[in-house]
Amino acid sequence: MVPTLDELLDQIAAVSGAAAVDADVPLTQLSDVDSMDLMEWLYSFQSEHPEVGADAALFADDDGRTTLRVVHERLTAGAVAPA
Amino acid sequence: MATAQLAGWGAALPSRVVTSEEVAARFGVDEDWVVGRCGIRERRWVGPGETTASLAVEAGKAALAQAGLAPSDVAHLVVATATPEQPSPATSAFVQHALGVTGSAHDVNAECSGFVYALVHAAALMRLDPRPALVIGSDTHSLTTDPADRDLGILVGDGAGAVVLTPGDREWFLGFDLGADGSRTSSLQVLAGGSRMPVTEQAVRDGLHHARINGNEIYLNAVRLTVATVRRTLAAAGFTAGDLDLVVPHQANIRIVDSIVKHTGLAPERVFTNLDRYGNTASASIPIAVSEALASGRLRPGNLVLLAGFGAGMTWGSVLLRWGGGEPS
Image (cartoon, rainbow over all chains, first blue to last red; front, side, top):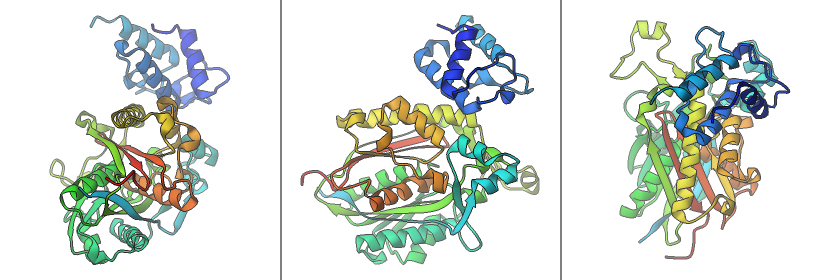
């Protein structure tokens, strides 16, 4: 249901066209990946897994330090959180 | 019962061209970054003396001339705008007077969905009162955007587009879907200037009279809501995406348009875009695009064409037309 971290990175790379995506680089510093790529991935994920309840808050980045590893942790936590 | 047919169309654009190179320099980024992010190479911004109403008047004149009608023939004028001439009265009052229209005049504010809303409202009105209606979408978001706001600053363009509806016996309107989700008002909003927050010196100092966008929310919901409205309108009318000859989406951002096309299964070659030259002109984007599609031959009599938009609010709307109408009713 929820992708593994590697699967998430591959999916983001596929959406954005980036050759590779680093899990530990802050989102704002990812080369070849921008916020619309992330939202495009999220739209597809929401469509396929509406039961997870993922939303744009996954990518909240108040301190500029959010990475895709953090996003994956949030995604996993949200998926297992009790309803 | 008489139905509405589109008898005239036209557009008006400011003469000032603002290139993405110029915008990029303002924000300290590369031109390629701007174009890659939104697909916009240039846009038009109003200059001195140009306003939402003045653009609307020029577009209205062009549409009336195309239809062979005089302003005095117009029974109802509907202006879609989110950047009014002034807070009160309605922009349509200024347009009505300048054009010499003597019929009713009112505004519709559904943000970037405004033209689709106004078109449907006018067509519905004509079922009760089968006399010509003039529908105009006009916006000047360059004037409401914070000059330091890169997210909006690269997108916005100014312009107006118009259509004239006249009574006819061939059915042009095959279906529509209008809707809104008022729980999402914070996705794109101007906080100051209304009863909730009147304009004050402090509000202006804080820039609250400028539009503010949550780009992620807009992207997600623009795609989700537009995909849904397209599907509903097609399904209700008994058509599929493959039946469409042309789709004219709100010219928001090429990335959003591409995503909508992908997720609805629309044929990309049947989707009309001109935002590379005009940017996001809000309520005006669809009628400007329709006018260009007609001028270029992309839209022809007999075509099945879908107009679809979304806007702040959030609002959405789509309308399915048989250009030239079906068999006489």
